[in-house]
Amino acid sequence: RPSSFASSKILIRSLTTHSTMDDAAKKLEIENFFKQQMETSKKTWEMRGKEARIAAHQARQSVKTWRNMKGMELMIHEAGHAGNRPFVMGLAVIAGFAFYTQASLGEDAKKDSDYWQAFHAKH
Image (cartoon, rainbow, N blue to C red; front, side, top):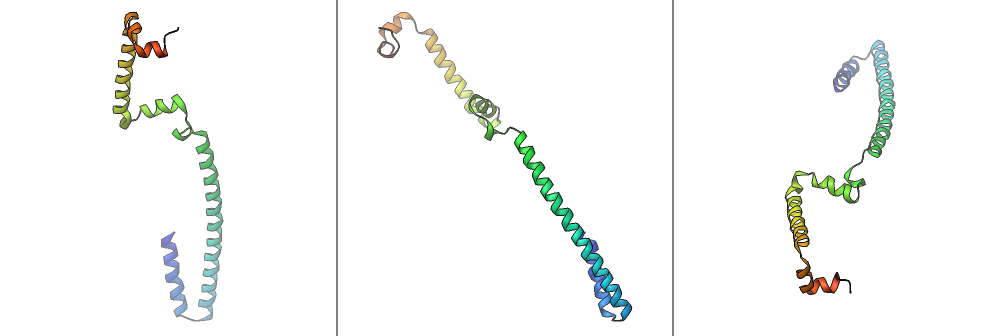
């Protein structure tokens, strides 16, 4: 209420320039009125602020953000972002090549592979 506050200052200034008993009584009445209005406004603002903070806190608790996600759920969430698409595409290509290489590895190639014999072959 900036406009009413500014107009009240003008009214109070005009009342202070004319000092009679009626003007002083009017001034006191106006000042008391604005003091009551300010107290009422402060009480309302405090109530709104506390209620707003409580409502905001409850809203944050019910919504699942990326900070609350773990594992595959977080990976899927991040893969959906436009900035991560090149990375996801590269990961898919590399995973595809790895799967193809593993699937196309025949029995003869496995026997000749030192790596396969050392780590995967059952002796």
